[in-house]
Image (cartoon, rainbow, N blue to C red; front, side):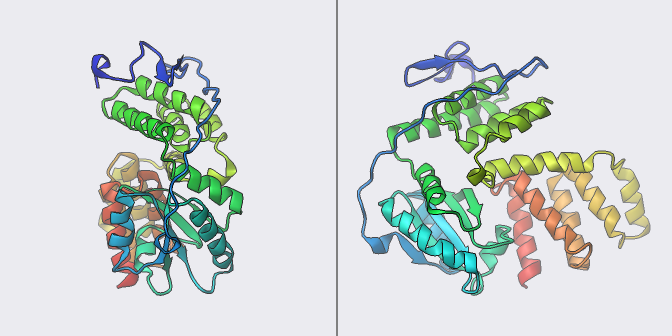
Length: 341
C-alpha cells in the first residue's frame, strides 16, 4: 500500500481520534523501545435478545451452521467441555451468565467432546475446558481453564466490542495487516503502537509489534513487549502463535544440515528421530507442508514414539502457523483422520 493512498499515513505519525503520535520502533538495528500506551475505549450497549437465542449446544454436523456461519454475523464462543470435567462444571455457569449479561454481543455454543470429539481434535484441543472465539468464520482468540467471572467478562467485552471505537481499532489492525502484506513494516509498527496507546491490552497489537521486533532481530525487546500481555490473555491465539514461533526457532538452533537427516532416512525409513529433526528444519526453512507430512508419518507409524512426541510437535506447529494457515488446516484434517478413524 503506497503512502500516497494510505489513509493511515500521517507523515511519520498515526492519527486516531485526533491524537497524533509516532513510534520509535525501527528495523535498522538502532535502540528501540516499546510504546507507552494510555487510554482505552468505552463499549456501547447492545439491545438484549431473547435468552434462548444466546446459548445452545451443537454437534459435529451442526458446527458449520452454528459456529462458522453464525460467526459471520456476530462473534461466537465455543465451549469444549465434558460431563466428567470438574473445571468445566465450574466455568459453565460463569460463562453462560456473562454471555447473557453481554446482551447479544456474543453467542455461546457448547460442544460435549465425549459425544463429538472430531472438531476439538481438528482445533488441537488438548485439555478442557477450552474456549475458542470465532469471528468471520475463523477462530481469532481463546483461553483454557476455568477463569474467574471478571476475566471471562473482560474477554467477552473485548471480543464483542461493537462501538465506533471498536470498529476503529479493527480497521487499524486490518490496515496493519495490509501494510505487512505490502512489506511496509515501519507503517505496521506505527499502527500497532497507535492501537496500544488507545487500547493497552490489545493482544493483536502487542503480538503484532512484538513479532516485528523479533523478525528484526530484536529478541529482547520482543520478549519485553510480550511480558506486558496480561496473565489472563497469555493464551490468546496471536500471543501463543508468536511464543510458539520463538520457541521453534530456538529448538532448531544447532540441529545441522537437512541433508544428513535425509541420508539417515534413506538408509532407515524407520529412523523417527531423523524424521522428527528433519521436520523441525523444514519448518524453519518455510516448508510447512513437508514438516507436517514427516510428523504425520511418525504418528502413522508409531503413535507412542517419544510419548506421542510427533503429534505434540505438530500441535506446536499449528500454534505457530495460526489456525487459518493452509498448512494448519490440511495437517489438522489429516491428523484428525489418523486419530479418529
